[in-house]
Image (cartoon, rainbow, N blue to C red):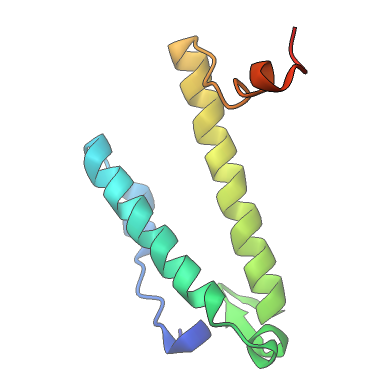
Length: 107
């Protein structure tokens, strides 16, 4: 399936979800970084025509804008899940709001 900027969706989703082996944190972060760089590059070149165009994505007929919102929301949901699990397993505050002590808002 072709998407924005003519990029091909070459994922093998069933294989991804059936994967039983692990990868190192360093490899995972490198893959995430590459994915974020690619997404940023695509988003930075979207035109009004891209956002209004129609696409068939995973069985759904959507506009480009619909697809962008869904991708951003989906990533945010998974990012939140990862943060929550990390916080539960580590028992530590991840420090996202430690700067509030500098603003005087935290007691």
